[in-house]
Length: 410
Image (cartoon, rainbow, N blue to C red; front, side, top):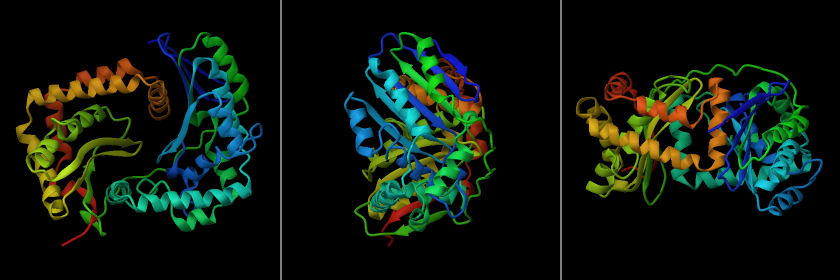
């Protein structure tokens, strides 16, 4: 796979990945700015700003006109906000790659951010927040991250709070963009059926040259788990949802692939330990899985499940027991199987050009280097049985677990 990388004079990083066999082109613009970058009292601003990018630009001055222009070419498009990043992406038929770039340029450089649209979008975001409150499977994630990472910008909910959403003004969006949306904090990837990479780069140069330089450092945030092991939100639900886990390593740590394989052994796929123990052997849950997540200042492995209301505490205890036991009963074939699973699912995921664009942008913004498919596969292959054992010895301990639960109690 050929990866072409260049940078504009303003610091904006650019990846071009021609794929002759592709039937589409994906363009992703990623900004190293998210909820972590918000000031106190402005919680939810980064996510709100992402919404506002779709509410009209100079060329397409309303949400309807912008959406109609994209729908008219059959585009698939979206955006998302995370703790440390915000991403905007468009996927189209190959002949519309230049149109995708123009739209993203308009959203970045020429968003109108009209006060009346801000006021209307408040209601949308508050309804989104209300929706999550009614979805314990999603809400428990926010409770868990606060429990494990702490009551700080890293641990707080990305969507913000009703009172801060209601208080945000147009000036807040302009100030946030001016401070954090600058060239050195951005990466743009174009992946798919690219016939002339030089033409694509020249178009990017013309459309994004006005992005200003600037490299303000992120505020340092250290994960600080809450003293209480489990936060239980008592609520009338049909099943109890929980998430439990422990701190591991940040994004740049060389042991991150080891954490990923350990998480896969425990709850990745229908042959994993926790799927077998909680769903297949006991029939307590419909869903149970584990995952690994990393930020610049820390990371974690977590298990998430929705279980029978009268089995929640037993299921939590079983998760802890299985993690602690792995230090003694880890099996070499189990490790090999987990590596094959991670490898296969990663390759399937990378078939989508949007996912490859995201991978390249993430690794540039958070590692400062180009790392593509081959490098990730090499990292997976290099994980050894002994590394997983040592990792478990270092990070898995009864006192390290933190969790959140939503459901009835007693």
